[in-house]
Image (cartoon, rainbow, N blue to C red; front, side):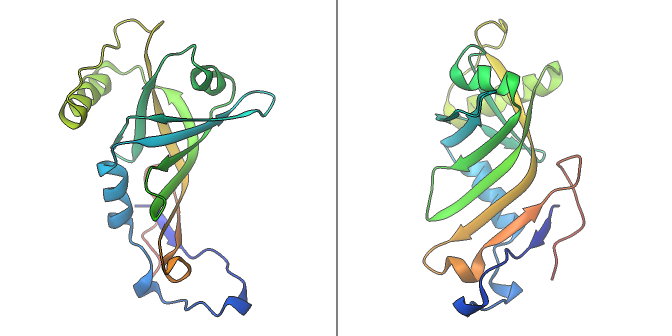
Length: 171
């Protein structure tokens, strides 16, 4: 489980710093798992930003999505693996920052194909890597908040180096 911390907020905002109000990792992970549409933000080698909606699967502490390797995001991620994943909901939001790597493990891909089918009523075809590839996002941090009282509940989750686990949440 990633470590939960409070973002630094200006003292003059007089925002309560009560961990009981903070969003939990369980709530955050549920949002990541249940979301239907996600936004992927990448940038080219030269720093030109690009954002695109994708379908995806949150599984075992990673976010997986498919794309054409020659799409703008596919080309960007080949040259610059830094990525931001944002769920569609901007009022009860989760934003994940991390790095991507191509997923090539056939057992993982087989499981993801079943997950895609169950979630989207869609059967992916990843047999030709020239037309579709799967990327896995290894998270480094995740931000979460819920409006209208976002300043009292916003949190940042910090992942261990492997992107999967860390020390337990701060109390």
